[in-house]
Length: 335
Image (cartoon, rainbow, N blue to C red):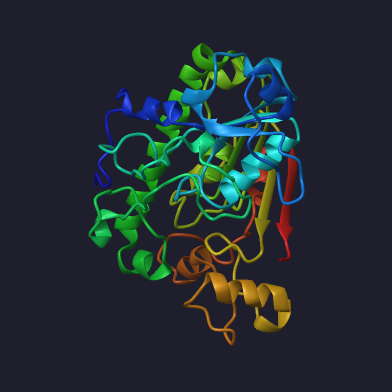
């Protein structure tokens, strides 16, 4: 099974994701780079950060300013919504954040969204905007679009063709691992050796942040991993039980909502939901009825008993952390 088709691991396409990185510089690094601050870390906060593409960053040692360096891995839709908000919040805490753009690598690659031109000078980078990074969407070829690695995870899709989707997700993870490897291998030549390196990811990218291993991580002083909106369960996105194991080279912080639409643990009755949660689900899940319990994609697929997950799921990384001997914390949010 070779869908989506991926370039050979040595192909330069993977380094293009790093070259297209979105970067958030901490206030200290923004001053050192002699760049004009153009972003805040939320409404009412000062414009002390700089956000833009890697090509606009002068040659500098990002590891020598601020508190440390973050390599950030976005979710499957690219650097939109919460992904950029996480980056800006990390920047406000003193960390410079470099996010290889899986969507911005190349229009000839397996997935692509056209980047906004002159992004750092594009105007007001409003914190709550859903997308200011791309001019286009990415339509998957299974929906008649041009890009085979763009997709939408729906339980009915997986249940209709479980073996095909299982292999598909494994190849998506191979794509992200290759991009992560290329980013580490090109990082020092472009931005200097990181200091206190952290891997952080959201959803699809959180699997990379939590599970990815590379010899350079030790050289770069890996200090921690953060997995957001992700559960380290055996599920439709991690179709081999062995792949749930975690490296124990650094502490892991896992933050995931009980209502995560993709990786939440299982059925949540309506009477256990707050009014705010019900309103948020109704707005974000048009297919959800306020009279029905909430169930994530992973929980729905696992409950079907087709071999893609063992119900009930844990809905977090806590169990995998204990089994792998990983220090840290796993927090399941009630909203």
